[in-house]
Image (cartoon, rainbow, N blue to C red):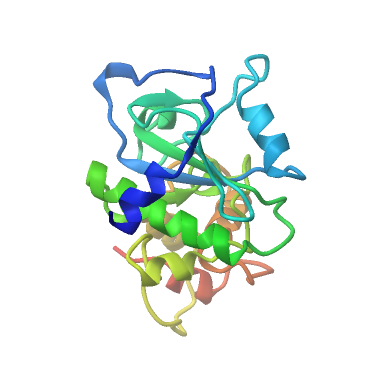
Amino acid sequence: MSDCAATLAQAIWHPSPNFGPRRDGLRPVFVVVHYTAMDSAQAALERLCDPDVEVSAHYLIGNDGTLWHMVREQDRAWHAGAGEWCGLDDMNSRSIGIELDNRGDHPFSQPQMAQLEALLAQILNRWQIPSSGVIGHSDMAPGRKFDPGPRFDWARLAQQGLAAARTGPVTSQAGSWEQFRSAARNLGYTAPVGDAALLEAVRLRHRPWGTGPLCDEDLSALPRG
């Protein structure tokens, strides 16, 4: 049995009542990565399976690498909420949601990342989703969501072909807001938000160490049309 097949076979089935059919015949073309922002995986599991809360995800990965499977991939979990990516809305119908047991203020553990990588490889292969389809909650909902946050190691995923890689080295050409918005839109940031929220979302994904006003490093982190 391959590592990918073993990943799903070893998942703990813990069904959530919070799901429905994908709308309009849509299928998963994105994977959205979240953090739970809770104190434990058990607390997150209880919340994601509470019918009164009406939130869920397809998977939850604990800090120790434990994998829970809560909603079938064919079904529409309620994890993404309002937002869009690449001009597409109803992200719940278009995506698979993975929650990571993390408060957002500490690094993600090695067992957790290893489990995520194995799961992602399986999902991308099964649904023929390109690496560019793996996004953070903050990517599709700028200004509203901030997970998986600045401590998440996107570069590690990119090195394995499980997320889009950074586009190139920093240049010395200063960019304008018009250039930055155009480049961000080309990448997929199409949600209607203000400049500050867009800059924060891009930095969370591509330059988590970035601070201050827009600079040339922000623009160089994105492809230019």
